[in-house]
Amino acid sequence: MEGLDFISQGLAALGWNPNDAVVKTRAIAWLGFALAFVFGYVGNKTHFCTMGAVSDIVNMNHWDRMRAWLLAIAVAIIGTSTLVYFGNLDVSKTIYTGSNFYWLAALVGGLVFGVGMTLAGGCGQRTLVRLGGGNLKSIVVFIFMGYAALVTLSGIFGAFRINVLQAEPVTVYLDGMQTLPALLGLHTPGGTLAIGLAVGVALLLFVFLNKEFRANTDNILAGIVIGLIVVAGWYVTGRFGFGEDPDTLEMVYLGTNSHLAESMTFVAPLGYTMNLWAYWTDSATIVTFGVASVFGVIVGSLAYGVTHKTFRWESFNSPQDMFRHIIGAIMMGFGGVTALGCTIGQGVTGISTLAVSSFLVLAAIIAGAAITMKVQYMLLMREG
Image (cartoon, rainbow, N blue to C red; front, top):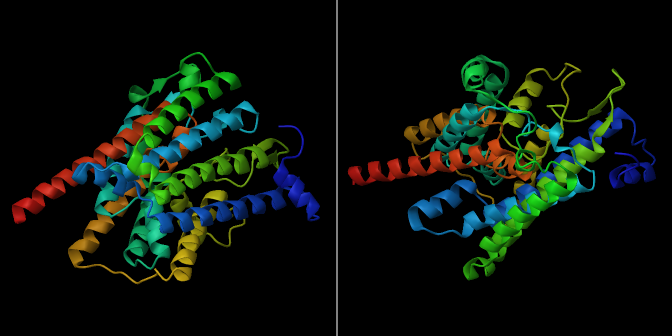
């Protein structure tokens, strides 16, 4: 990672030292906010919703919103593989690609998250978008999901996650990374790009061969923009964010909670937000790329709602409605951290690294949501 990237060149042109760790850390947070602002703005405009994508298929056999999600995945895979090819991202330095394959945690976490997002009326990113649009339900989901994420990261839920779901007997230990290129013996920049292009192009063909989808500009916009935002996030933290720690003088990834390269994800950052609020005066807690992205989505969605006059207050219909949202939020907090991501964190960002566990988590999330929707429909029919 030699030479200055274009972000560093921009900072230098403004008179700031791009090699200063404090400057770089703050810039990473602001860039995370800016990218998430666009995410929230476009997410509100296009009604991008991963839970809605599953619901459309389960209830109406309608694939348009799922194709938008798959388009985001395709763009993210191709873009991320290109970053790897040109040396702008080392995918081995992410949370998704490690040699320990926690298949049970991926499966359970994904299923629990899928159930939770259905009960709560939307996944993590959709909660933030709806919050920016005036949905008061999302405040409750935000708080409970964030707290559940925090105690799954380092609290009482975390003990179960580590001692049971990530225990040695249920962990597969690999010789190298758990990515498709590594498992196929093609772990080179060229091999990664080739497999990334193959998977990405296959998805693009599936998406754009549908005439109805091609006519929906909102879905196309959502898929392309969200995919590119994930790629940009990887560049910001994985290329620009790679720098010298002023305390240890070691080369590390600055401005992220994991101290690795990160991109868009919306469950663990809620937990880190809760921790930041609780220990605000502690100099060790800072606004990171992930924490800033949480508020970027909210503000971006708010900006769209206000400028296009779609902002409106919404609240719970009944105590039962509130209870379902609370349970769903807790399940999303636990499931998202256990699975190392949500519908965006694993379903787009994780898959962009071609990590096998990300594909498993995505399948589990979809299965959990689909099963819950079927059960809800059956109960509704009985009541009727």
